[in-house]
Amino acid sequence: MKLKKLMEDIAPLLGEDNHDILLRCANLVMNNVANNYGDFIEKQTFNVKNGKITYGRFKHNLLKIKSVKSGGREIQYDLFIGYICVPCGKVEVEYACVPRFKTGNEQIPGGLADILAVGIMKEYSAISDMREADTYAKMFEKLMYLARQKGKSMVMPC
Image (cartoon, rainbow, N blue to C red; front, side, top):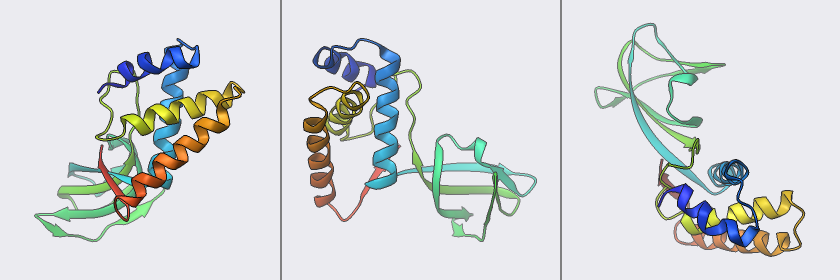
């Protein structure tokens, strides 16, 4: 499902049709989920020429490095402010990230539509000082608790 469709579905419940505000709420929810409840995993291959991979070259916002490989073997790397230092050549980096919605035309990561919908309602109701804010917050926490019970930790594709 695309985020835009989800936002269209929940907008009437919130009395809000401002796409930008709901998009911001969706990104707050994704940040919350990625930082507190489970890892969104991405793999990306780089052709390294100067021994550095700047964080800006990653498709998604980097949370933590899971592994760095060259030729299928794990290799040493060093983290610095702004970049990762690796040997030159073809390098595959597996990392946990925070997916970002930029326009709303992006697909919602697998299995997160319900969590994202309730999370958007939670965020929007909190910033709008709606009386339903506590109800949505409790619903969100319950959904996240149930998601954690399915496995020790969630690992989701970006």
